Image (cartoon, rainbow, N blue to C red; front, side):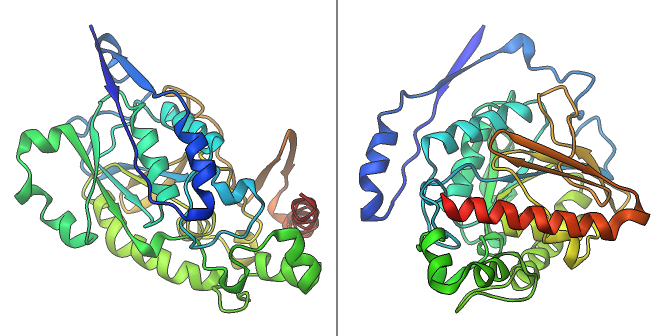
Length: 337
């Protein structure tokens, strides 16, 4: 026996994007079927909360799928734009990769592209729980058990939006074409704004400033959930997630600026005994996959080009220099689009 679920998502978008969004609405409505014989977690997946140890929990980090402004090569930052058709497909694919991992609570930014990614990922989940956005952030999260019955809680997953998980604010650069911005301010200046740790663009945030709010929110609101044995998914943005990974992996400011996250590729951590352990980027519901970044391994994806650097601690400074050069090359190619 199988059950079909249809999910509609409504978005308020800027006037200039209406035409593109109308095309997205032409996409066929997705119906997801679940075979009840497949609902039992495999032996390779994380066990149910009732079976796992109370001091162990899963943390899933997902960067949102491609947005309309990503596709147009515009600086997006905190501007609220929805996903493209490709971004929708990426989010659905991400959901397939984590479909057997129990999820107790979801945290997202306050931006629609991150919330859409979380919602679309959940329609693939084997448990068929309905994601419900809670407003007023942690205040509503605290009253979850008081407002909903036990049966309702078993059938749904709370989604907690937080502005602290928003993308880095790019200030005066937001909405500008990256190529035109390089021509206006100079390629080196734009590279410095984008890839330095502590230098913000005009009226914007540096990565350091983004990290201050994102990591503080993670420590105060998300880590306690993990400590209580709850499995957590965080759907956010490149820079807010880089900031969190910097905290989890104890990266330096030089290492984090070389960290590149692909859209809608889930990263899995296990929180146990107060420590975070990397468990990879799942390529399927029963496969561990490969982690995207560590202190000794760097993986970058650029279109169909794949380059892999591996180095020992003794060669770290040399490799970081080469990574910076490669990062500059990627930026140059991005600005030409």
